Image 1: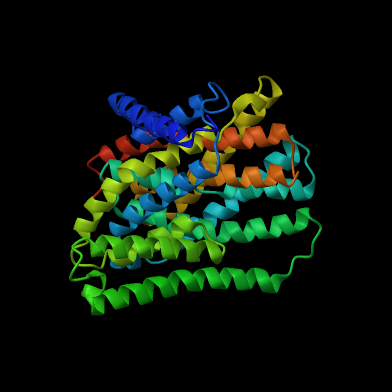
Image 2: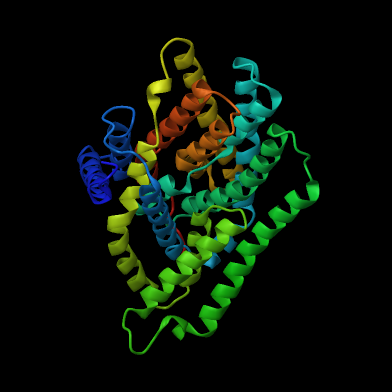
Length: 389
């Protein structure tokens, strides 16, 4: 398998197609089946998928296209109308889970202070990709609740990287320099604001910026270039690449014919987006989780992870009403690939051992799988009023 990359790509894509189809037949979002397919084909069970650099790149591009699509269906005006709510939800959604994760590691596992702080950082993560996919599938991406979730996920990413920088410095025994940390935070915020303002302003002033007379597909080509360019820039300022992709989508949403671009990007995404979810599942190895004490610790970790994010989202979004606040709370729960990434960093740097690593990976998977089946019925009621966009 390792020596035949095309066969590996075929197997991963086939797993995504079959997993998504079976999931939809069970009236579940297709992302559930795709992640589960990755788990079964990964190292935990069949061992048919070994995540390599090729799959990682395809997975990241798939995630970028997904968030680009979400941005295309999100207007700047709708984000502005929500005011400070995403900032409040995101900030609380960093503080409470961090405290919960720290307490779990410090009290129940008796880890060192630096290691406990690192575990707290893993609890902070929010996977915008998984929730965004479900929101698009159920046709709820234009709701105010969805915009709060996605806006708060961006805040989570900015503050989460700041937290990770602090705890990583503590773990290595280095000095925490406030200046560079605040400088990095300011750079991230400046990047988001300037990219949105300059990009949207330019496209409003000259909608033909995406048009090349001799190429009927030029709006799609230029849009994808902007998506990739802002993704690279986002990664270089310390944010996740998918944040740049989301910003690019919000900018291109100002283009008069952006609905055409949506349908074109969806065609490309039909091939690439499943890689993100199948590879996320394949990154999970549950072999380090046994019964007894490990199972108990996993249950407690999952409970704390769910409650801490839900409480933060619920109370931060109370102004939208109780039902909408519940939706926001649930939508903030998945840790997904972000939680897996932070746990992997901790294990690579020998912050904690295989037992803690396995529990954090399993927690990230569990929180990612329980949310998609809940969002559809929550949005299915008649209590929620349609978005005004």
